[in-house]
Image (tube, rainbow, N blue to C red):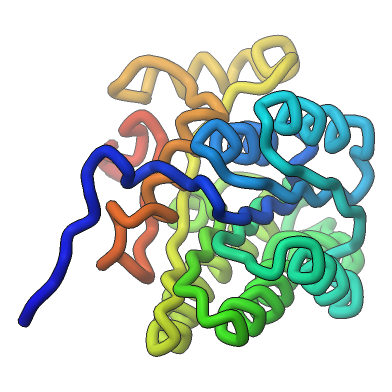
Length: 263
């Protein structure tokens, strides 16, 4: 069986590619959007409420000489998700990479959680990923693009946390959705993978949750918190030809914290 290996030096070159990042106005999403732009991609940034953050990211990308745009919407609504994907297709006539990053992580106990709190987390973290994947895959298939979908899960998809049953359920569901959609979309050359971050630094984290930061630093073999770029580089790899035979995988990016014995 003949096959060609991509040139090593060009594996992370995304020039001419179009990447859509949901929840790209700040944090991990911003880091992912900027990293793909640095790799040569044109990037579309979605936001729900953080318009200022999204526009700042877009301007930073344009300053690199790439094309960029920001779209708002509630991705748990099929019309919003579909409309944004269609707008991307009209603008660029292609879509190569979808990063399902949108997510929320409020706290609520099992006993006190309201149905509305449950629905909000499941809709934002899980339903939106399905709707975006469905719409993006349809465009990729129509354009005959062997694209990549990357879902941002969490180490909580595999390890429970207090007051987070809705969040862990959504991320656990997203992990299995990753595998299921990889199974179905593989025949079209579309790869679907997940990246599971550990604790990622954000402005004010040390002040707002000093105990959690201290515990994480103590338990992470690599001795530090993660940064958005750590997650972004994992996404670059999984979206690139370097990961051409990887689909349905969950890449844990946590500084090694999940290596600990449970008991």
